Amino acid sequence: MLASLLSLPLAPAPDPYDYQYDGASTAASMGLVLMIMGIYFMIFVVFWLANGFAWAGLFHKAGHPKWAAFVPFYNSWVMVKIAGRPESSFWLQFIPYAGIYWMIVTLNDLAKSFGKDVAYTVGLVFVPVVFAAILSYGDARYLGPAYVSPAQKQYWQNYPQQQYAGQQYPAQQYPGQGQPQYDQSHYGPQDPQGQYQQYQGQQFQGQQPEYPSQQAPQAQPPYGSGPTQQP
Image 1 (cartoon, rainbow, N blue to C red):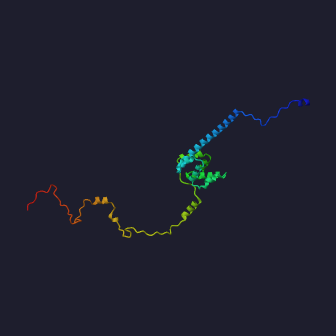
Image 2 (tube, rainbow, N blue to C red):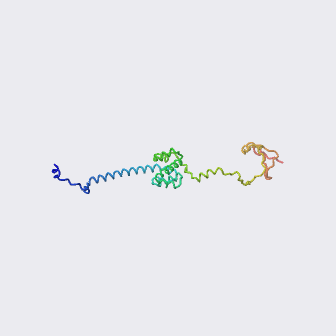
Image 3 (cartoon, rainbow, N blue to C red):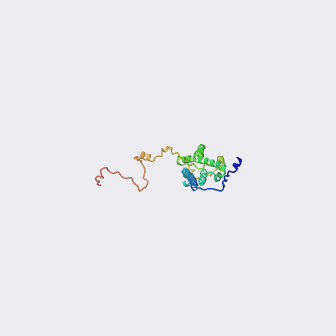
């Protein structure tokens, strides 16, 4: 029995370097890879356009060009400027893990710059396209940078404590200042039109003309001059 088994021819071992390439399978694999890459590229373009249009109106309200919302990295720089934060806040966003914190801080100040609260910041973090579009095309107005530097805070805290009571200003002289004031209450209300209507038609006895050359007009008969009298 053992001798019969030893007499059987042994099958040759497969050669590990013997590959057989199939042109059809290779083309199909490359086509599948290109199709997947194309799908990912289309998804990226759609997301890029949607994100750009969502932030474009916000940039325009803050006085920046709309095309800046479509430029990667530069749009983050503009957001930092709109929020009023220092330039270091942009570079700190590239630090792994810590950059997420600085991005959230920038979005928080950005929401406050448009009069929104912390709850709106949560929406900008998780659904930025939707909440950015609401800021861009809604009734929200840009109120100015919300971030206040420590130097500005210190200045605003010390500003109400400044004393101005001890300052004295020299008295200014105006024309007519120092002359006696007369009581004009007995002259009645200052109404030139009313005084004209009140005294119109009244004749004053014994009043002389203002100038010697002026004479009062003589009264004439109502129906002409009449016959002349002979001397």
